[in-house]
Length: 185
Picture (tube, rainbow, N blue to C red):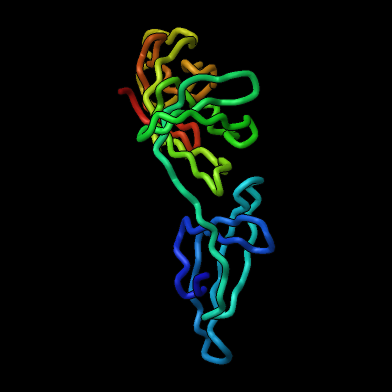
């Protein structure tokens, strides 16, 4: 149990037997009436985001979430196999749990897997990863400015937008949260 005054970003709450992660919070002390805490909560499993207001000082149940450093090994049917970096134990994570992160998973990528009572909740990728461009249309002579973009396919099969000068075989840095091109690596 924790007080709403102790809320922090990333904290996982157990509300009505469902796990919610605190995305953002704000303590509000109006001139008239009691203080309260305005939060934005994200459902850990579905990703649904809701706004919820708590009275200040209210006790809320926190969930014990174990975040472990793991290495992605391979895909096995409908599951992804991860290995715990500390004890080499392998766990299978279902495709819906991995979600959008699957677009940027390369073998041997270091990720964080959040577990609650031994069950995987979500996979957290590094903020950016370097990928090799496997296919893109050739750039034309003179297309060396930042003005335009074109589609490119990276090693995982995901399509991203890159500047016109990027060619096949170029290593590019990609933001894993948005899929945006960050630069050459």
